[in-house]
Length: 440
Image (tube, rainbow, N blue to C red):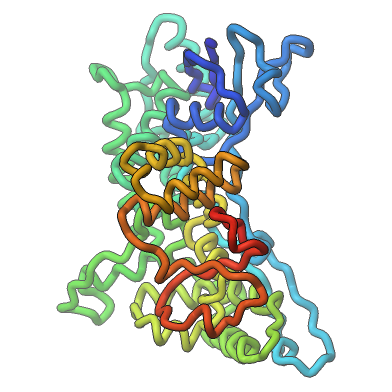
């Protein structure tokens, strides 16, 4: 099948598939691999009846020989405790800790809510710059004439690009700067460099310098994410100290945000104390805890980045962060990614190859692996495939998981199951005789 895939307005590619995948999920995985897409996306196809795009729910909807697909990147799913600008929790009259706060704990929307995009979107410039670019692009398409820019025009373009880049990252790497430069000349080909084969290398260098200057301005303005590195230059009374540069690693989006508007160190510390008191209860108010953890995120990141406390101190000051829900929520605040969704998408992407390895002659010699695969043949749902892959991984690596993975029923004694286990996974199921237990 021949596919015309629309990734963005200026990124349209042609792909040939030898065989058509059976499901939409498999088709998305094929496109993800061929187009090297990282973010989650949905698919639409051009319907022959309406001559417009419709959501693709089944591969049978596609024409037989060739089709046009449009990729719609999905925004990162966010938890309820970080998706609201200000969601004030009302103060009730019950004598609980969560009602002893004088000013309501509010959920704060973080400044960065999305990771670095697969296709960078060039921002809209001022009207006069956009008008010049429009005429320049028309001239370029007619006879290949490149636009001669004034210094003011180039400065505005770089300023706008720096703001757009900073909305995702304060310290973009070389490849990310390169992707912005390429996106710029693809959207506005009249901005290509004269005498350059690629046409974007000069923009990459200029944007690199502009990002450095932009960070300096924000550092002087008091941006905490950047001000934390002033000690590296030995200023502000810290002469002689040569600290390492503290900046985000890889996909971290909200590395060191400023405190929420209207709140200071003292206010956030008070909210933290109330949250700790709430966590000491047998049945804490998790709605209050979620809002408090979201509101105090900037204070928590300040402690982690600047003081680098040990885990024992973090557990004492922030007990809620070690709860299952808060682990996922904190990951979402820091990375702007749904931890569970990201894990299962990665697992599903590798399911076919792992299951193929598990059926190899090398693994057929392992009795436990044969039992798992025989049980999977009886019911090969996607959920059971996931469990089978995870359960078979230790055996594939020639390790015995019986000491750290245990399966039990809800009637079994908890003390008996955890006896002798320092660290492990306990799965509660209805039928312990099933080699592939899908527990709750």
